[in-house]
Image (tube, rainbow, N blue to C red; front, side):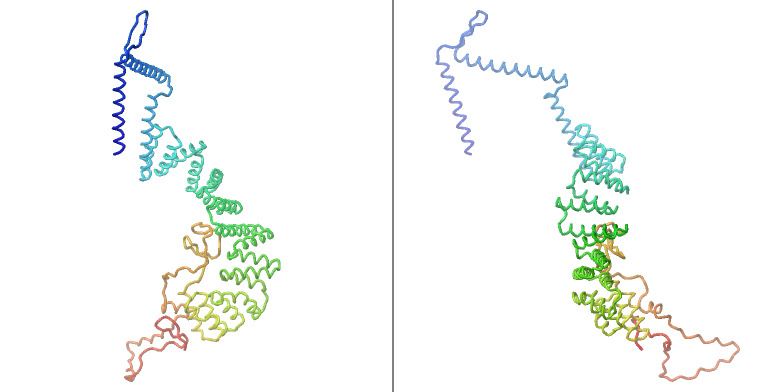
Amino acid sequence: MLWSLVKIVLFVCAIALLALAAKYLLESQGGVQVTVAGTEYNFGPLESVIAAVVLVILVWIFLKLLTLLIATLKFLNGDETALSRYFDRNRERKGFEALSEGLMALASGEGRVAMNKAAKADRYLNKPALTNLLTAQAAEMAGDRRKAEETYRKLVADDATRFVGVRGIMKQKLADGDTDTAMLLAEKAFALKPKHEETQDILLKLQADKHDWEGARKTLNAKLKYGSLPRDVHKRRDAVLALSEAKDVLDEGKSIEAREAAIAANKQSPDLIPAAIMAARSHIDQDNKRYATRILKKAWEAHPHPDLAATFAAIEPDEKPEARIKRFSTLTRIKPDHPETRMLLAELYIAAEDFPAARRALGNLVETDPTVRSVTLMAAIERGEGAPDTVVRGWLARALTVSRGPQWICDNCQHIHTHWVPICENCAGFDTLDWKTPPMTEVAMPGGVQMLPLIVGTLEEPAPEPVPDDTAEIPEAEPVGEEADTTPAAPKDEPAVDSSGGTLRP
């Protein structure tokens, strides 16, 4: 509102000034005298002003005509002009429209349409850095691998798009299973753009698959350097790589290098069970029993594991069972209620033939967390205490239906491994194995009463009576009492079986 009022005031002031100027020119005397070829032209004040305005307009028209003439000559000569810029803008508009339509077709999964739009955009724009990328991705979607590879090679030739081209060819080689070439391309892509997280992961995986542990550790350090990996995760995975490197060195027979690598891996990640075992065994080989005990104790504090107990036993392989129970108190005092500790104590007492102590050590584990190992230990305890074979076989039969206990399981694909490996044998995941109990599933097998005869022995059936001859006289059956039991007795040599599938003590 205020601005409109200001504009009105300014317009009125301008009209007033023009009116005063016109009045001044009409009332003024004199004028302008121009002599052209001996002829004098006299102009009054108002006429002089009008003539000046006309002259300015004529000069402006002349300059425009001159500019048009020069532009026409440049256009004919091929130079850039306003006219050529108009046509260029028109072509650019059409090119970007085609590029936009191609991107939309690519996002919609229409590979062939995207390729056509990319070709049209290339004709209008003449910018291969943009159109070649669209062409390559569209060709991959359409299944034209040859066209895609040709386009990626064009991108490699340009410095600005070299990384995109190398990455595209690398992915094609990975899809074809050519891991050797893919690894070389991954190294090239990593050199071009070391901060690219996807390239880091691909290169790390390929190096681990090729057992290039030294190169994998360098790539892992680069991930830490550029912030794509937390420090604690880097520490754990570097320990895994160091342990894998130690195993390879051990296979080559370089015991000193393997020992040093194993100890270094254990220092980086003390809770890594395979590293602790290898480091402890390296100290055992050097007769450094105190260091081996310290390593195993620290690993047991992090996660009790049967392999740790086996390595701890190897420190004194020839000791008596009573002495072993006393020495193992270093471990068993740490987590006394852990199932692994309780089963370990039960095994030690069974070896010492102290079966009541073994039963106390095992406690109610067979009811609260039954596993094949704990149930088998209970069968050994029953046998050691002189229980009948039916009881022992009953416990062994139960082992068919309980969990197998903790195992090395891949967190990605849930594949079960017999031993720890740095790379999953099923999904090729790196450092994905964890010591845990797999979920229980129903087993497609006979259970209960149907399965027990296969374990405790097939139940004897009464022999059939001989079929009488047709001519023989059939004697009358002897009378039995009204309250007589007609149920056949169980064979004496075989255990009685209850209806739930378990065995009963006699």
